[in-house]
Length: 348
Image 1 (tube, rainbow, N blue to C red):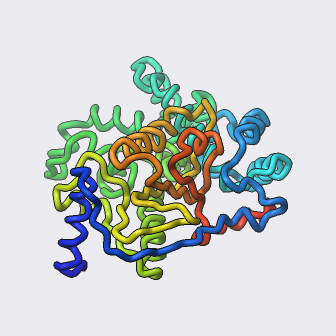
Image 2: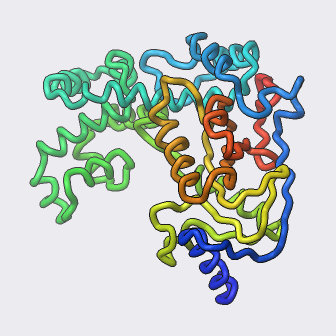
């Protein structure tokens, strides 16, 4: 918990940001040396951002996407992608982040199929005749959990309201569908997926889907916590986004934190900070994702706080094309807090 007096000072400082009044400072100066892990690689690989040419080369290698493949890479596929990464000079974890964004864009573009009733009826019929969920994913080139969700949704709709009355519940159809997918209600599960084979298909679908089914939704919060612990260790005063919103300050423009101390990172003064756990790609193919998650936010903060006062720390790194778009904002990778196993482009 933040002591009341300290919290009041933080709020006053944040209000000064909002009102464009003279900034309240603690009067303390703190300097951070944020060293990129890529400096230790041969030739300082990709320090200052990955050249867009390398991203395009990786995309054109054809190794990132396969028809019907929406989950974690198998061992053989991982070796294929790692080999391309080694040749191009991009760490595997960055390629994996680019692949995830490409998959999201691919699913968004093809999602109309699962809104076509004739297509859904055809999928349901094939599944009832024991066409495996992975074969359906390959046939329609859509995430297996998304396909299974449509099957479950149709069955829940057909069983309603009988199934709701049967167990004396008040759940909505969408809730029941989600409870079946997450296996949170065994009675619903056994009534909707009626055989052990169908329930096994649910397990297979979730194991092979990183887009239609999210396993880990805490990565962003975990990364933020890690960075804030680093600041605490260096005795740096700051106010978090949550605290600003609780106090009703800067509710429409809240970076992840504002510094109260005069903080210098690698010699540049930073007043606001945004934290991201993914890789910021410059590829046109994922432009919508990048614009929404990075570009628009940075532009908004630069308008609010002025240019030359902010930084974005991306755990998995960033494209030089993105950092070049915002030269007045400091772009940093995971620095001393994130050293991936594949940093040296090995096959481990």
